[in-house]
Image 1 (cartoon, rainbow, N blue to C red):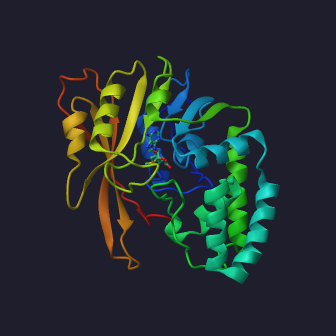
Image 2: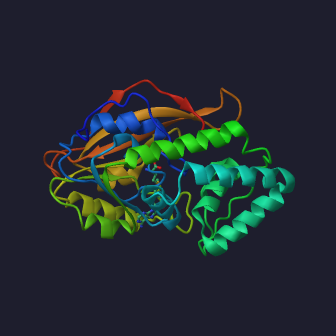
Image 3: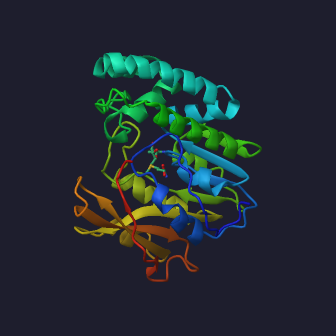
Length: 308
Ligand SMILES: C[S@@+](CC[C@H](N)C(=O)[O-])C[C@H]1O[C@@H](n2cnc3c(N)ncnc32)[C@H](O)[C@@H]1O
């Protein structure tokens, strides 16, 4: 069940959206990773969890410094949050959002920043501007309202409930541990039969309370990853129309590199789209002696909007 590579027929989407979500890259990742599936799937930059939920390993240790994501998933796993509760919450929120609009959104945001409820987190993530997840320097959610008082129409609530049901189903019977942790702490637990999937934030982009990722952090991660005794893969952007990601050449040299190109829309017009090359870095046979090998094995660019 966990053995990789594999092709995933129907890609599922989790209830939480975040910057850098890998929904469109799932098969690129799943088809390029080799893992016997005996140990644990270790994912220290979990984000939305879309990779974990689609790979569906039997055993996993997954973490993120963003406690809100981890708490939501822990509560779904323990049964404290389920479809019935989410449905009732969103139905009531829908009525209040229709009446109060932005004022109601801001009231929930304030309450969330004081109390940190997972249901409020879900509400904000699914009704804020562009589906962004961004926090101020004190850790407060600071994305403005998406300006859709009718956001939680019946069909949208059903979609979210189905996403909750799906991840609940994926968690059932599996030995999955969700932790709030820094990546260093999680990687210290990796053992030989495990597989580590790394998807750190972009260096210097989307910087916020939970995504303060510097060149120094990225270099430290490269050093630690290369010393792991188990298999690993790292996702990172490789190249766009304007520049190449020099960090890959400078710090992951000697490893095997797969690339995948896709397009993203930069505006509402169909023709306004940019190409982005994504990389998957895998351990080479001989870490420091082989020059970077680039293998582009998927050449069917797909189109998608950044935060759907
Ligand atoms: C690019 S996102 C991961 C996206 C994820 N793969 C997905 O498809 O949704 C990076 C994640 O790393 C987390 N993060 C940032 N700094 C971290 C750190 N020092 N340790 C652990 N997680 C961190 C962020 O909170 C964010 O969720």
